[in-house]
Length: 382
Ligand SMILES: *Cc1c(COP(=O)(O)O)cnc(C)c1O
Image (cartoon, rainbow, N blue to C red; front, side, top):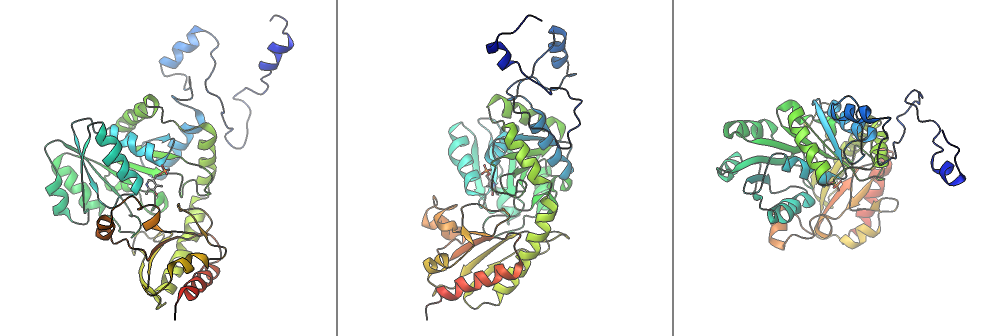
């Protein structure tokens, strides 16, 4: 090796590059590319013997996250991407092309609806949104160019639990693929792939990451579909950054503990709010899984309450347009997630100005109940 000047030395001072270091956790491979010893080594990459070339194509942290969630979902393969929305987009584009058609649930997450109705439709992908609780409505919406049925295992904000068995049957009967957004249920409560769903997608921004410090997505399915989806992630530049993959993976390690605690707290909160006369309706699903029913509780406050006062009286419970962190937060669908909808569209979905979505955290259940009761009491205009 020739002698290096300071300027050369400073950019070549890589110390511990070896794979042989036995660090307890996977290090963050914060690198945009990987290096090669010689031309044969490059050939080995294209022969599939060497795994990494360029981070947009693949990176150990991203690969690990895809594999982790695939395992938890009991699916053969997974791919991580930059957000829940990009994972959904990769899933759709691996199955549907311009001129083809999607039948999707009308109560999909707002951002997913916008993706389908605004972005993908402008690229020539057709859609029909229908009420997925009616199998007749789904069947009537299927056209000769339909390729995909898309829904969520537990919907937002009213927590309708999808009948996955029916969806799979309809799809089989019409030779369609199926995709289910499993964000609210998490792989702890439900594994749609084991029901026969082809693609299962997560906004890992939510429970999988779990700490409200990262935006990421994961899509899982069989090897062929995930290979296609991976081409979309790479080719359309929807890759996740290694650090965000690492943070998501770190969060995922406590998914079971968090979901156990949060679901138990949610059950307690739902039970107490049922008994509160100032709450018109409590939405909390039943029989989701033997491990619990999830950690979101949606309520419709009685219409004589002052909603603004309720939101001002929440104390340590913060207002946030997201969900699934370790802290209890509340959101206001009519002014955030569903703001873009017309009044009629909101009415059709049952969203009015008294609907509040509560994402239950890991605090002491009694504390959550007392703080919510206090806010409701303050908002009661007598
Ligand atoms: C948040 C969310 C998304 C979108 O995920 P991002 O990570 O924000 O892109 C999709 N589906 C559901 C059910 C969500 O809650």
